[in-house]
Image 1: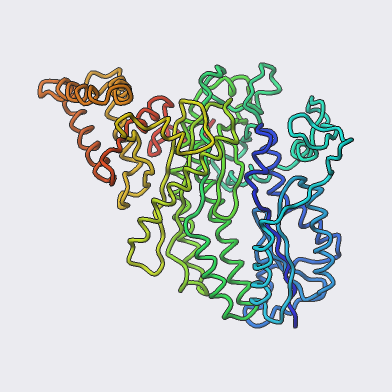
Image 2: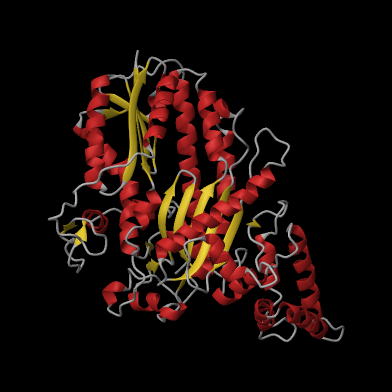
Length: 568
């Protein structure tokens, strides 16, 4: 019995989502990506007269024994799916229809798709993966073509079409039209746990624009900053990616290839679906943390909406699938949000990996993740900032891989790390240039200890230590240190490194004197400072800029406890 396998993968998803640079088009693109493997795929299967057979209805061992009109999807999420059927004609019909549907539904989206067959399911999957890899770097044609006589949309140079009704735009290209016309909200809904009784009856609104108009119909859509003053509108762009998954996926396929077709499907489906669920639950727990803390805050947005059951949230999800998370969070909540996500991700993956009996010999006990985070003003170029966040994530991954290479294990796993950067200057195309501009001093010191670990046992400075360092400061208390001293120290490090050392010694003598009220605060500060810098391999790295970022952005401590339960 032959297995006909069709696999689809959207590629360069981030580029598709970020093109246009406006939050409303990014939201539309995110929801389109989410809908491809949900609403659109269901529609395609239905139009061809096919029926989806659920994984739990398949035999546990042996062959699949599907009927002619039955298809099975061991993987379908995040704009990626694998479809299997015994019916060759049904597979061919689907392969002809699907690219047309995707091109119309998500114009401008690049994707790879391949089909093959074999008597052995694992061999069919191997053939398809080989074809997909060959396709990924091939150029793709997009319609409509922009001929010399075509009217072009000024912002992109692509063929112009009518803008969606109600958008107040003179025109759009086909891609922008699709993004602005979307009517889905499934991605945003995935961040809210519907079973959470503490949020029962509440309506959570995810923002769709940064611009703030003072007409009331826009209040629900606007990003809820602390004030309506654009000068104080700072956001964090977060890009989080799982560690080592590519390596373990290869091991998974190698392990499954020795099993029967039914065991192969069950094993692959349990892993891919389990990972999706684990990531979604982690995102829900992080969003829960944010809601619990944010609901205590009084903002103009809550006042204007005048509905105690409606809460506009200071975050916007963009990508959530597999082991990936991309979102925008208000700057002061960003580190707490990602700390909650990382802790939950490690715990959730630990729980679901325990149940994968068929793969226990190839998988680690848990999965970890790495985050790149960049703090910018809401009016700075988003796509450029996101590129930097990706590069920060890649830089942190290299540090994690260096640690995992030293692990005495046949299942190495890098620690969860985070590299964050607060940009106070112009954004550059290259991360090295940006880091030199923001963090390097004339005597080659670096004013950051990033990347930070989330767990104390890892060979990196720990994020919690940075917040403990911050707790030593309070300008309104006589027995605490004044943050202005750190700002002055940073300025001297940039302008006159030799004098910076003199300044530090004078500051130490002043606040660390036995008779000074700040003696205890200085002792705590000095001990933490030494612990953190000793963890770093390079003694020329200091946590000065990291600490200043916490001050400047008033970043909430991830371990702080909300004063009240989940009420608005």
